[in-house]
Length: 139
Image (cartoon, rainbow, N blue to C red; front, side, top):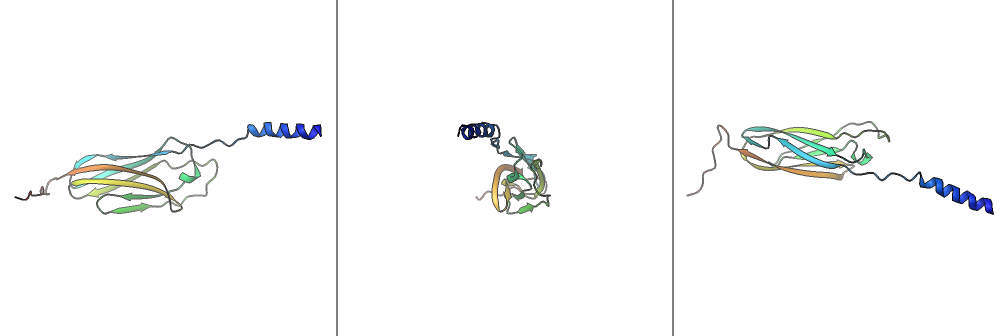
């Protein structure tokens, strides 16, 4: 009976060292370059996962870009199966042409297995450029 008690105490102490580490989720940041431009303007968007751990939930996501002008594009990757030592992709880049002036709210959404895992937005302003007329104010 004493041996059984000692065995339980020993196994519970050993188990304390083996608690799984709580993983920290990365945050999503969205940048655009340039933020202000003249039409027609092709802008470069960079969505980046910052901080956090390399988690399976963030491995090989579908990336949906909504441009704020009615356009949308989706990027899907063909990735190898997840392994515990796998590094996640942290930077996603896309370009978009805004042919007309206006203020546009662009949104990037990361999904995994049809579940949204991160969303971020950025506003861009396109001024009327050569060949585009400014809107005429009604009299």
